[in-house]
Image 1 (cartoon, one colour):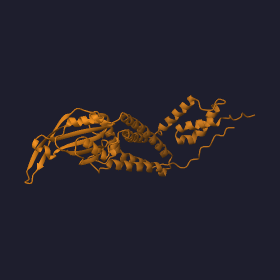
Image 2 (spheres, rainbow, N blue to C red):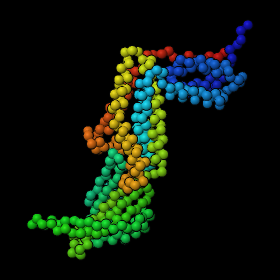
Image 3 (cartoon, one colour):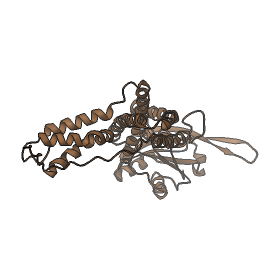
Image 4 (cartoon, rainbow, N blue to C red):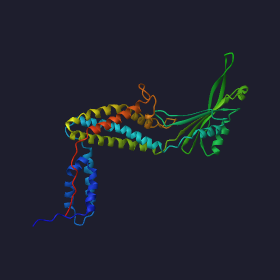
Length: 360
């Protein structure tokens, strides 16, 4: 008389299969049924879900296999390290972008006109928004002042509207008047500057008017208003989390690719060359991103302009002293295209599907 096959609860089998998702797909296809069958045989009568110790063991073992590289392939270890470093930079950019979504929005053009008028200008003659490969966007507007610009009166106006305002700092400058005969009259300007903060925005207001009474009514005075978002408390933690996630994801992707290469037919082994080309293409963007990471943590405490960010490296500009302004973004797109081509090229042949466990 033969012993009966143990009857297992379907929910228990589904629980074990969900836990096996921690293992690489290649391992599940080869050993998944065997592992589930063994676990069902070892289950207690009436058991409906995996025990906590079993779940922890399966998850840890699966993750360990996901991080493992094929043995005897030192070049794969170097490629995995470089891939992880590249992905760490892009992960930092992703965390930086998410952190920047917590920044306050800059005023639109109508809002900039209102702020400039509130700062004592007759209007906003010059308005623009600027970005750079190192910082978040900022807004600027300036306008003429008729008569004397009273800095303290303007400062109190912002206080009354609920802004947190700094003290006044003196400023000076000058402006030239060009005459028909080609001569220039230099007119000294004197004024003050202060900072106002409210709802995540920081305003730098700088106004000045002529010191000579003969030129007070000439509209040579002006007010400059610079607006930038204030960095939030969530920004730096998101950059750190993004960097760590990118490093881990990069190693996992490299490990999965290494096993794809090992299982690929000989005719597809040139995918390794594509992977190397992708690493070369993504090297400069990764260096730019890590450079911005360094600036974010090193210089943010002393930087007075718009917040330093990591993902701003993708903004077209002269990040490097060579190449076009879109170099970082262009190499990133090209590198990702080559990565996809390498993964598709290294795709292993079709494998039989995993059979189901039929207890009974």
